[in-house]
Amino acid sequence: MRHLRFFVVTAVILTIVSLGSAMTPAGAFGPGDNFNQPFGIAGGSSGRQFFDNTNFSTKQPCEPNHAGNSGGHSDWFILGSRAHRSVVRINTAGSSFDTLLAVYRGNSLCGGLRRVAANDDCQGIGSSCVAFIAQPYTTYRIAVDGYNGAAGRYYLRFTRQNV
Image (cartoon, rainbow, N blue to C red; front, side):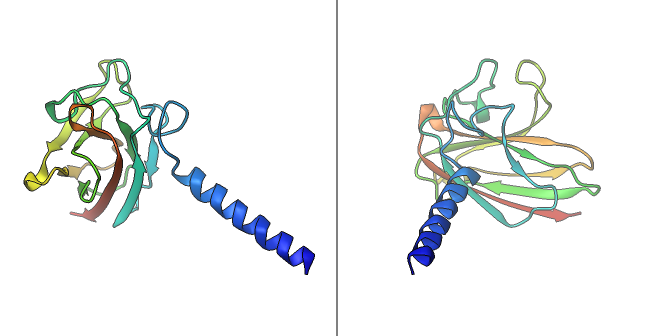
């Protein structure tokens, strides 16, 4: 019985640790906050939802103003490429703060990004939404930030459909 209890407690602890490391609170110490260590969205993913918070996230040198606002607490995602054109829709509905959302092409913050889509206040509700045509074999960078430096818990919903 003692061994079974040890096994169950160990399994619970390992589950909590693995869930926490899959999407940890972003910040200077973790992925997502750093443009060069973004959260990944697999190329074939569709209908997925991600959640995290930007309370400890920062704005990096050369980082653009997303959706025309200075923000200040951004998390980054990278969307893998596919062999077909697709319509990508992303939104932050249900987030606890007024979000900014922007999509870019490029691999460098300092002069290497080209904006594809950006939004602040989709349908006037404080969440953001974008839709764009993703080109074949192209990687996209997605930034979630807070209006005028707002931070908190966000939801990032993602769908992708071949055209």
